Image (cartoon, rainbow, N blue to C red; front, side, top):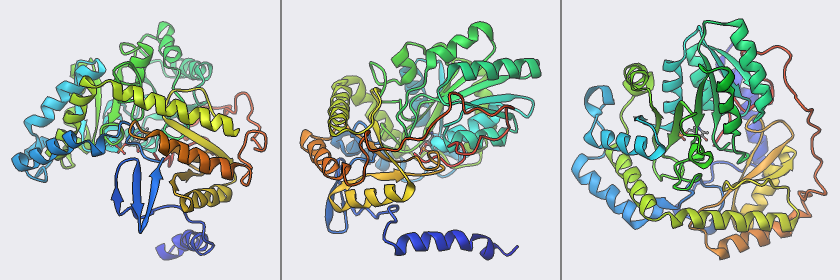
Length: 432
Ligand SMILES: Cc1ncc(COP(=O)(O)O)c(C=O)c1O
């Protein structure tokens, strides 16, 4: 087949969406102030960012980043394996390990590459990986690269996970069995039922639990150390993965664990660590500065929680469907994809920057507008967003009473565990 022919229908679809005036992605932001951004000549309230603690514009973080540029230069000059490893990387690894409560951490250049490289070097083709159906694309990519058998389980359902563990143990008595989930799910804001998943170790002591806490780090827990800290279950999680691209105002990612031998193996076998350039020193310095401030100013977390609470209470008052979690990710349930595109664009026209997530990031016909709040939003920002949403809720029929909610079966589980996630799963291309 000619490549051009293969991708023509997709390009035509995107073109038609643009021509019909409801393409909401890739807005070019010309300036950011944190909770506000400029697009062209317009200034909007940003409620789509993962900069949960508002660190990207903290003058102390910016100053530390600038200072590191003078000392280390702009680029790493190579992979960590060769000439790009700096003392700063090792200092950060020690800080991260202590912060999340593990013995050792391993920094990668992005969160995506941390999942990809780490999972692919932990698991082998002889192993079984059980994963929540709504895991991020980077986890799924790592699972695929490992060649292990991938067995999805119903989202956040401990009983379903338990059945899959039993099935895997009976079928493959010699395999390593991994259970991979997220601490906080990037689209729904759902929090993983970690204590229940960890209890499976009572029956299966060698179950290996890996938690991607990209959206929990800096957000959950008393010190912001993440979802395991929130539950007091740090010990029960074997591998904690985190990113710097959300609350820590940079890019980069890491995995942390107590088993130093396994991490030594990952350090020398993670393809994305060995064969990809190191995280530039300036990004490392940003993260270190964020950790310093977070440790000294836990009140930032309080402000994030207050803002989240205010927004969630406001959504409820408007009549929107919300869940009782404390994460700053609050999805607005819309339903049909086209309606979500239109709503996002109308929000944009009225000064609110919030984007839709559609299939396959969420199941078909269950599109959402993903909103996320920051500790640096002021009450006036949240009031403004609530006011705009209130004005549009009736028109778009997004209040709980108006929504046509999909009927979801109690299990929606495939009879036979598959090596591919079921249709509608977010495994393949979840954003976030
Ligand atoms: C759950 C989850 N894991 C991993 C990643 C990848 O992280 P990064 O954007 O830092 O590469 C993301 C973000 O996109 C995410 O939401």
